[in-house]
Length: 222
Image (cartoon, rainbow, N blue to C red):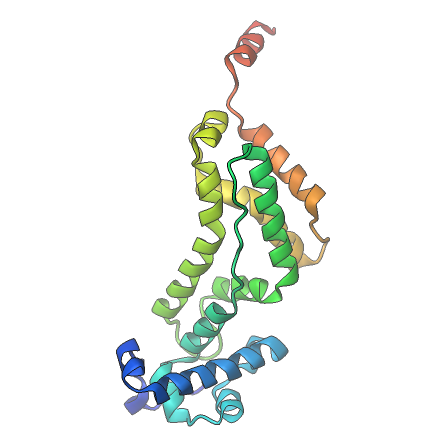
């Protein structure tokens, strides 16, 4: 993508969209087109020329909404990210973690855009644009919140702390969901419910705080 026209690089504000519904409609048409292109042809298909052709929105209008391809892609990914339905309940920590991890594994398996988003974020920006920290940071924040919030709810609960002590929850999330992402990216295997149960059991075994009885046995064992 070439550099945008200097006169049309200012991002459109929400207030402007609200003041002129036509601007909101043109933005939605651009995102509809980018979503279609991304879903059918991947990141490389989302070019200014393709988006303006499919949306029938002028190039100058595109740049009024999005100052760079990075901004356009970030907004498209945000629109496509599926909603995570967090398992609710106050049951045992193990069962809650297994249910959540299984939900995340199903989401990753069934939603290829999730993996595309992670791969794109890891690269920082796409194409000939310079990195756009604001756009990338916004999307990254959305993805992190989507992944970590339900885990934080469980791992910082009184029951989890009593069982596992004080955890580095960020690293704990990496330990739990990292193998699922790796398996999906490499295509080695599909992670099912039994695999999620094993991952959770291995995690709990590694981090479980010894009970007083176990500690006494360990001390007495030569």
